[in-house]
Image (cartoon, rainbow, N blue to C red; front, side, top):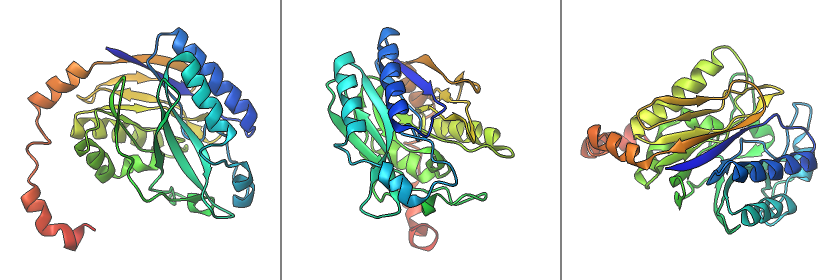
Length: 273
């Protein structure tokens, strides 16, 4: 058994304040004997609608900037793995990458994932401030199994979760800032449980709360059972990851082996790609 601490945050617009909050949470997670601590999307700061892309670019940092460096130092000092998010400079003057980081217990930056799917839907246009990534980050072995990373709106696209699973993922990390709206909490729960069921994997989804966000950070086991719903308060909770359960579920329901790829490929050029 391994333990993951899930942080539900109500981020302020102050990057320094949010960094101090993150370091505090890393220390608290270690005190709770967690092996990994996971933060939501927009850990660095809440970007209000009136904030321009140029203003967000001035806040953003490179991967060797202070925000990431402090998180790496905290991971090393506390001997704990960290999944965190930053606004990363993209080279454009008015758009940034929405980037998730996996830092190991030695403080080494092991994986960098830039959000593929931008939330240009239901009245929002993330592409006004964000720049989409164009690579799937290779899953990495961690204390809670092999970790694959997605971000928020990515969860609506089953192709990405399946690709990550075929690359070896056992625990899908989905840091999010899920925006409030009609049926949005229902969508959130259904999508995360579906990704767990169809891939036979754990799904860990720390979410923002407050501001315009729903809260309800979730943890889902490989059978689709909801093992944690954090409601709407800003807090941290710890759940256990049982990789033996994952193996039992995949053996009993061998969905990955039952795929008919020779049939799917007939339709690749016409309907996919």
